[in-house]
Image (cartoon, rainbow, N blue to C red; front, side, top):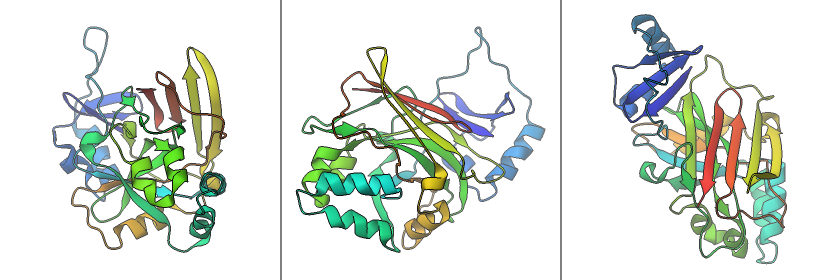
Amino acid sequence: MKLYKTENGIILEKEDTFYRLHETDWDVAVNRDDLYDWLLIQTEQLIPVTFSEDIPMPEILAPIGSQEVWASGVTYFKSRTARMEESEKAGGGSFYDRVYEAERPELFFKSTAWRVVGNHGTVRIRRDSTWDVPEPELTLFASSSGTLVGYTIGNDMSSRSIEGENPLYLPQAKSYTGSAALGPCLYVPEYPLTDDTVIDLSIVREGEEVFNGEVTLAQMKRKPEELLHFLFLEMSFPHGAYLMTGTGIVPSSDFTLQKDDIVHITIKPIGTLTNVVG
């Protein structure tokens, strides 16, 4: 099932049938350990709604209320290698190798809710950066108890030039206005996503695809439950939290985003998150 936060309430989709939830507070609606079962009951009690050209679906917003967005680093081998290469001159190359092999994962704060961009929204590259990439990431949603109840697609916009100068510059490379996108929905399945789930990244410039790559969840070194365990270990999230799980798709060092590029990130069970670079 898919939950859409819209400008006119919360829309639930199940097998191409839509329902408008009576609950209008996103934080209250999603912060449930039994979210799938609760949504299933809604489909049995609510009257379906129909959208058409005359009655279009309301504008879809980023699927977030008051939640914080956190992120994970170096969870794929390719990401480890890329981070080592970009920070080698600054003497920080070995940091990422150690993190990849360590018991404790790299977790960092990514964004407050009000800074998050939704589907078809504008993401940004920093003015003081010379090397910028999108990072397509499966994003977990956990309830306030730390229970994984849903997924969305995340775009962890990153300045590789700033992070490469010094690993201590990570917050500036990762967290700035327009650096985080989520959408198009919160996907709530009965069972967890399988390892053969594919993440696909496509970047289009002036009508031409200039980059395409894909990776499966099987290539993640760390499992979602492990990442959530460390996130919730000494942190409380009263409305739940989003956690980006890292990227395994890294464009080569001669590629950087440009203004007006269009970034498409697809995870088939969830959908496609599309953003324009501003």
